[in-house]
Image (cartoon, rainbow, N blue to C red; front, side):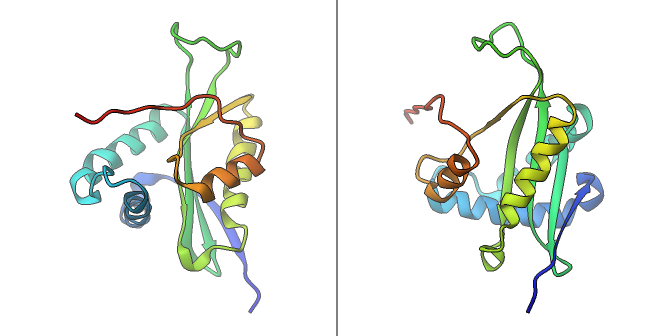
Length: 162
């Protein structure tokens, strides 16, 4: 069967339940990689308010991938302004990619790569020249993908839980 992938920008508030369900899947995956990841039921309301606010107030873009008409993945990013604490040479706006996920059963079709490239192009067209994103250190799949897309590790976050 031939697959057809369609990428659509959506407003989070208008697709709240569909997006929350996909975010829940992302959080389950993240919890499997890091046991300190909060349960979605504990953070859903506040996190969804946050992403809606970032979309509305920080030039955010939420893209959903539909595989043969079925929502199967997403990516979300928004613009962050640099403040006086910056230490890098770059002084423009930067895209922060905060969330992204493709359902297990839909992987292997290049869906996340297409989501990522479409999101990047939206912001390149707006003049953004720096993209920042985080992933868990043991998320080898995401790290390999990012490196294949020419992202470079620039900082490591160390945590100590007391």
